[in-house]
Structure formats: C-alpha cells, structure tokens
Amino acid sequence: MSTKELRKSFSPSYFALEDILASQTRVPCKTEMNLANCGFLDPSQENKDLAAGTQVELPIWAARVMSKQKRAFVSLRMPKFYSESYREVLKAEPAVVDLNKMGPHYYQSALQLCTLPSDEADKIAESLPDILQKRVIAMADSYSLHRSVKSTDDISNQLGNSLKFHNMDPLEVEIFNNSKNASEELDDWLRS
Amino acid sequence: MSPTPEELEFFAGQEELEIMPRFDCPTMWLISGDLGPFKAGIPNKVPLWIALHLRAQNKCKIIPPPWLSKAYLEQLKELEIKSPLFTKMPSEHYMAMAKMIFEVCPQDIPDADCVKLLIKDIWDSRMSKLRTAVLTFIDKGASWAKVDNLTQLEMCSIRPFFTHSLEQLHRFRKTIQVARLYSAGNSSEEVRRRLRM
Image 1 (cartoon, rainbow over the protein chains, first blue to last red):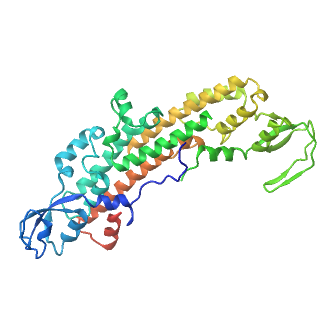
Image 2: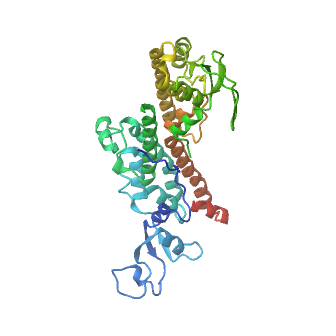
Image 3: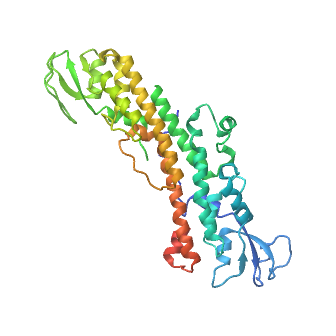
C-alpha cells in the first residue's frame, strides 16, 4: 500500500540536504594571487602555498567565498556541464539529456551558481525553466500509464519520447515519485 | 498537503441523502446535529454514512439523489463531451458518493448498471480533459492555473504532479529575476538572501 505521509514540494533551506549536496558541485577556478598555506587545495603539488595562476576546482560554497567582488582571491569559469555548448544541447532536446550524469543536482547547483560573479550566471538561470518545463511534460504521462511499471524505462521503450527514469534529476525524481504514488492511491481507491 | 481519496470518501459521507426508514425511532442527539425522528415510511434526510449504515442492516431504503439517475446523467455526459471546459457537477463528491452507494445497495438505484457506466464515462471524459489541460498549461509556461468546477477527487489525480511542477518552475523563474538584479550590480542584503533560496 502506498504511504500516507505528507507530500511536500522541495524548497531549499539551510538544512535541506539537497541544497547542501548541490553546493558540492565543483567550479573550475584560477587563483589571482599567491595564497599562503592554501597548497592543500591542489593535491597535485607539494608546496605549502598556492601560487597565482594555478587552476583548482573548488566546490560552490568555497568558490563563493573566495571570489567575492571586493576580495577576489580566485577568478572562476562555469563548470563544463553549464557551459554554452551543453546549454545548447539542453535547449534543443531537453527530454533526452541525462541530467543525473551531468551533476547529480543539476537544477539546484545551477541556482547556486547564479550567486557567483560570472557573466554567464543569468544565462544559466534563464535556461532552467524551459528545460524543466519540457522535461516535466515528457514525464507527465508515464507516471500514470501502468502501475506495474517500476520506472519510466519500460514505458519509454513503448512510447519513445518519455523521460527516462535514470536520466532524471533528483528534483524530477521527487516529482515523479510523488505523482506516481498519488495516482496509484487513486487507482487503488477506485478499484476497492 | 493534499487529501487522499480515502479522506475525500470520508467527506463525501457527510453529504445529505434521503432515506425511507423501516423503523420508528425518536430524535437522536448527535454531536454533529440531531437526527430524526424516524417514522417508518416517511422520508428523512440523513448524512450518507448513516444512510449506508442503516441500509446495510436493512433498516431503510435509500432514495437516490436526483442526479443519480439515467436521464440526468445522460444529459450531463452529453454536455461534458460537448463542452471544452469542465461542466459543473451536481455534487462536489459525485464520484465518491456514487461509489459508496453502489458498494452497499446497487439495487436501490433504478438502471444501476447503466448509471454506473454513465458515471464512469463522465469521470473518464473529465480525466482526459484534465490531462490535456494540465499539459497545455505547463507547456504555455503558466505558473498558476484556474480550474473551475473540478471536484476534489479529480484534483487528486493531478495534484502532486501539477502543483509541484508549477511550483518548481515558479522558483526557477524567480531566480532569473534575482540573478539579473545581481549581475546588474545590485548585491544588497535582500537580493543575496533571495538568491540563496
């Protein structure tokens, strides 16, 4: 039987696990000055200090602190999955892209990337609603089609255009699972 | 939070219904209100759950509500199929009420099989209409939707999907606006706080 717990939509907060996990996405950064005692940031080198011009990858939460406009220790680029070329792919055919692979928390990380000082931030933000919109539509029919179906993979073989379950972002997985549970509950009730 | 079908069935049990008692009983004082007095053969209004309870013990005959009839439902089905919008249902809980009555006493309803089929047809046609409506709504990029004449149970079928999708879309759109402010150089406390969300 389905669970009767409250179904809440995800909304980030200081304690939201998804939000914390999303802030782990790594951002490629370049140091702008010599950073004393920061050698540990680049495991490949043995110096105690980090020289200017070194390429390092920092998680979003660290990059945000290090790149503040007034005291920019590092300059940063957007991660490759959020680059122009990947955005183009997502724009062209949002429903077939494997968001799960592109960063387990694609959407949430993207929202956090918008807080970083970068010219691309608002372009990334702009691309998000369209992507989710198209993908949600692709997901729409699959959750209620057949209750024995455990994932959308089985159906997508028949339909062709559905969103594949293992391609979903956690955000989409949550919407999908909630919808599936509710639709099964209704089915159960109608049949009882 | 959204009500489950079982909870809605409970609400449907509060709807009033006429019964023809087969027993005599003085007024009953219940927390939700007084019932009766019942006199054999004289129709009386009671909540659905009591009606079904009495019917199960064969203590009354249920007089089906006027909308639970072949003629009315045929008309309604016609309307529903023709209209692009949702037509108003005779009862907020038509599906649950029909289901509960049919479970206990299909023999009290004239043309029971036919009525059952009609209700199912109406339900199906509304559900398919609802599904296309939901997809068009998301497709058009709306962040809110007005749905008239939908019954609670029908909303159950779209609720977590529709509301959660729209909510996330709305959240993303809000972020665009704030990100624009931010990249335009506005890094006030307010903007930063909203960006964190």
